[in-house]
Image (cartoon, rainbow, N blue to C red; front, side, top):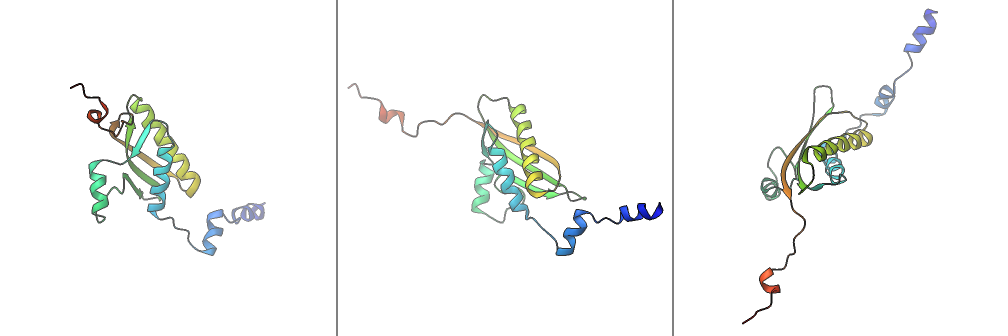
Length: 145
């Protein structure tokens, strides 16, 4: 009976099999792109990032921290810790939409990378009203003189 137990414990795990071929590494920039796309799938999200700081970050690419509104790092066990800045649409329930963003991001990142997500921190940077006309109201109005 001891032989049966020892043979069961010798079954290689999936991670052990994959290590025989080499390591698989997913760049944090790839994960950040997944995070952006997943957040934009949630109804009520106007943009990811988009604040003045993120606009400056595009001019100065050496800026540390958030990259276009998303920061991805790993904790001590290798699970992702994600910070995301969003601008939500005016009129939505902010906490509800932020919670949906958290769940959608965790779901997509775990599905696509096969790594766990420890935290998704959502920072609501602002609220955006519906798209306004780009034309000037003064130009559209008729003159009465």
